Each structure stands twice: as structure tokens, then as C-alpha cells.
Amino acid sequence: MRLRIFASIILTLIFVSAFRLNAENSDTIPRISLITCYAGKDVYELCGHTAIRIQYNGSDDAVNYGLFDFDSPNFVYRFVKGETDYHVGAYPFAYFMRDYCRDNRRVVEQQLNITPQQAWEIVELLSINLRPENRVYRYNYVKNNCATLPIGIIEKAIGDSITFSTPTIPGSEEWSFRDEMRHFHRNYPWYQFGIDLALGVGLDYTLTLREKMFAPEALEQMMHGAIITDSIGNEIPIVAETHILNNGNPNGAQLEPTPWYLTPMATCSLLFIIILAFTIKDIHRKKVTRWIDCVIFTLFGVMGCLLTFLIFISIHEATSPNYLYVWLNPLCFIAAIGIWLKKCKSILICYHFINFVALLALIVAWHWLGQSANIAFIPLIMCSIMRSFNYYYINKCAIKKTA
Image (cartoon, rainbow, N blue to C red):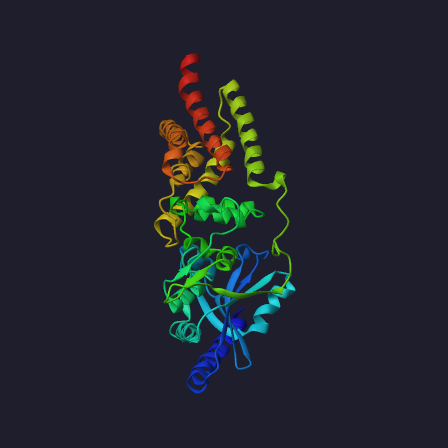
């Protein structure tokens, strides 16, 4: 990846210099196209990819806003924190196409129906972005990515006269960011489970047409029927021609759907059944199975530490507020550790009472909080409620009845 980044930087410098020289000494007009690549198998490829293609005087280049170096120091930590520095680069279009053809991913070209002045304006704006001092940018998955930046360049060059069509995907009219993600992540339920866990209510408002463009495949659909209103009021399609550059798989190169028995819902439901069985056994014998509480609340505590980092430290979009923090927080370690300490009994009784009431209140109030939850959270929350009820009942109610 570092070699690719380095090569891209060298080619980018050549691209910028060549276009600046050609713009000053040629009357020919660059041909500008929006390129949409359908989904790949890796999680960062599930919504597809967008680039701008420029054909001019025998040259054929791609401008790509999706370059990153996974091997750079502390990449994973910085990505989780939100310090997601991506690169924009320009290089021969044949190189750009190579990976997508190898993975059998569909690639669609939409040639723009624009004036010579607008074409040169796009080239100039791209050249500015490609300068050494500008080519690194702060990536944002929904607001500043490989799709929103190219369409932003096109909008800036053309002006505010573009009217976009709606995506043709059924139900997309009322999409939120989370709804759109779920559509494109449908074969990767564990990935969506993680997103639903990590990101809060900021993903759940109804999107404008412009906001729906963060997914490249949605952008392609919206460009298909988009129109430009010229200075005298004529409506002109923004796409002059559409070409399938690589037919590939219309569903991209995604993996096969996860079998139902390996989905988060199936796994979490199985855990719920196991916890329910132990809880019934505990109540019957009036004794808490300590290792069960240790395991389940340690798991919730670790997830709570992750949410703490995302909510209070990360600068990612929509990590706060996240109402799942009522359920998953570092206080869960009280139940995991305190179960082994006799001196903590009164503290544990208090914790489990508060946890039980808080989680019931969260379930009742969830409809009004505005945050969409993954259905697999329900059995997990019920596990926490059951174990808190179990501990409180055995150590308060059952003991009193025995006495």
C-alpha cells in the first residue's frame, strides 16, 4: 500500500503539471466522467467506490479520493479515534480499473454533459486538491468520503443548478444514514452489529437527497436522472452517456449472505437461552452462579470501555449521544469483580437494583429516544436484566422468605 501511495504521489505531480501546461496551450476540452465501482468483499468496500475520470489529449487518468495506507503507524487506533487521514491521487485509469476487473466488480462510467468552461473548472478544482499541501484530507464515512468529495467538485464547478433524482431502491425515501448502511451491509450482519453498537442517535434522522450520496451506488442512481438548469431555464440531463466498463457482478464482489444460524440475532438468542437456563436454576436453588455473572458482565464492561472511548475521546461522526451507554458502561465491572468479594454484597445489591430499573426504563423509553437499535441487542439487554433480577431476588427477597 505504501508503494501505491508513493507511486500515486509521483503520478499526481505529473498530472497537475501536465494539465496546467495543457490548459495554457491547448484549445481541446477534457472529457469528464463520474466512475462508480460496485461493492467489494472487504468491509470498507461494501458501499462501492467513486472516482473522477479525465480523458484529455491522449491521456486517461483517474482521480481517486479513496487512498489510505493501512500499514502506517497506529492506523487502527487513529481510525477508531476518528483521525482518518486519506489521500487524493491521480494516476492512469488502466491502473485504477485493474483491481476492479480482477475482483469481478461492476464499473459504470457516467460521462458528464457539461460546458467546456465547466470541464476546465473541474480540472482546476481537482488540481488544487491534488497539490502536496492539499492532497491529505480528513475522511468521514458519511460526510467527507470518496463519493461526497467528487460530487462536491462537480457541484462547485457547475453551480447550484443541479437537481438530483431519488435513488431507485425501494423504501429509500425515508432512509437515515443507518438505514442506508444496513441496505449495503446486508450480507455482513456482524459488521452492521458493530456499527449499531458504536454509533448513536446522530445516524438516525431522515436524510436529504444530498446526504444520501455518501454511498457511491446511491450517487450513481441519483446522477442517472439528474438535470442541470442552464442560464435561460432549459433543463439538461447531467449525464450525457452511460457505459458499463466492466460488467462484473451487479451485486459486486460481496461474500455470500451469512447463514441465519451464524447471525448476531441467532448467536445472541442462544446466549439468552443459556443465561435464562442458569437464572431459573439459580432462583430454584437460591444461589447465584458466580462465573456466569463474571463472564457476562465482563463482556458488557469491555464493550462499555469501547463506548466510553468512542463517546468521550473519538471524533468520529455520530458517536455521541449513544443511549446504549445506559446498558454498556465500565460500571458493569462492578458486577463482574464484586461477585467474588463478600464485602461487596451491599454494593452489588445496589448496583443490580439500579441496573435492573435503568434497563427497563431504557426499553420503555427507546421509542422516543430516536436511536435505531439492532434487533440482536434485545436478547443481550434481557441477559443483563435477568442477571440483575436474579442477584437482587436471591440476596434480598429469597433470603427474607427463608428467614
